[in-house]
Length: 73
Image (cartoon, rainbow, N blue to C red; front, side, top):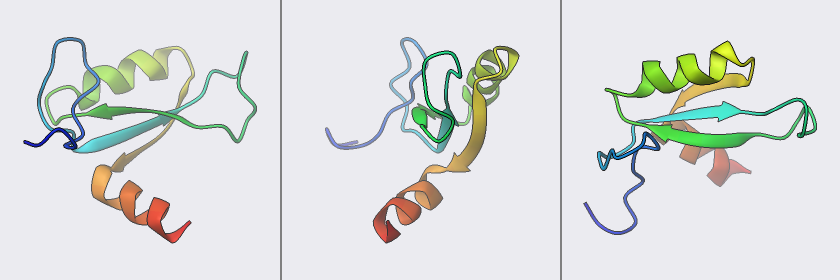
């Protein structure tokens, strides 16, 4: 892994990210705003549940797909 390798957002995890969890907090963000957490395979479900229970989770996308979408603009 290089310094530019995206890593999982789970506390203490240093594993390369595979997933992007797009979310927003409707109390403080506009509906179109998307914040992101990154997740490895091991932590994707846990982080998704954490955001989902709060009603924040909007989408779960493979990191490679997310990066392709970002490049297309």
